[in-house]
Image (cartoon, rainbow, N blue to C red):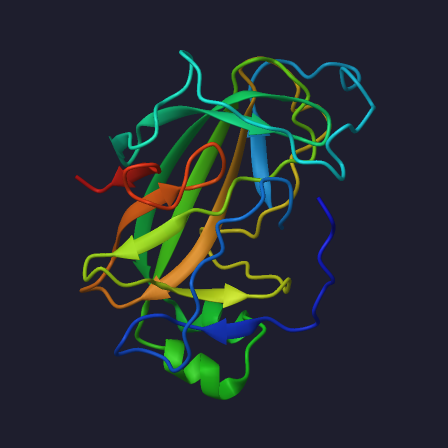
Length: 229
C-alpha cells in the first residue's frame, strides 16, 4: 500500500447542503494508512510473529467465510461485525465495533485546528461527530501498523457530514487523531481503537456508517452497515 504524500495544511470541506461551501465524499479506501489511538488487551508478545511484509505493495484477496458477516449485514451502533482484514504482515479476521458521539464544537478546539480563519468561522456553532472504531484481534495474527478503516458516513437527511481533509493534526477534546497500531497488536483479543472527526448541525447527525472495503462493496446490499437504531 503506497504511502500518500503529506500535505502541510488540512483542507476544509463539508457535504451538508446548508453548512459550508465545497463538497467531498468520504474516502472508503485502504486499511493500513492514516493518522492517535489506544490499545488494550492481552499482554503483548515480545516481538511480532513475523517481520516479513508480503502485503506491503500487494493487496491480498479477502473472502467472506462462515466466521465473517455476510454482505448486506445491518447492525446497530455498538454491535460487533467480524470482517476479513489484513496488515502488511498477514491476513485474517477482526472484530469491528463502531459508535458515534455528537458534541457541540468548542471554540477553543476550533481555534486549534489547522484551518484558515474564515473556515474556522464557518465551524462555530456546529457540532462535532466523533466516529469511534474498535478493532479486536480475533485470530492473533500480526496486525501491527494497521489503522481503523475509513467508513462511509451518512446523516439523518441522507447527506454526508463535513470532514477535514489532508494529513494535518485534527485533535480535538474527546477525539484524537489516529496513529498506526503498535507492533504488539498481534495477540488474540488485543484491541486497537481510533476516532475520526466529522462535523455538521445538531439536527442532521450521523445515523449510518458503512464498511465497503473488499470483499464488501458500496451498494447497500453488499456493504456492512451500522445504524443508530
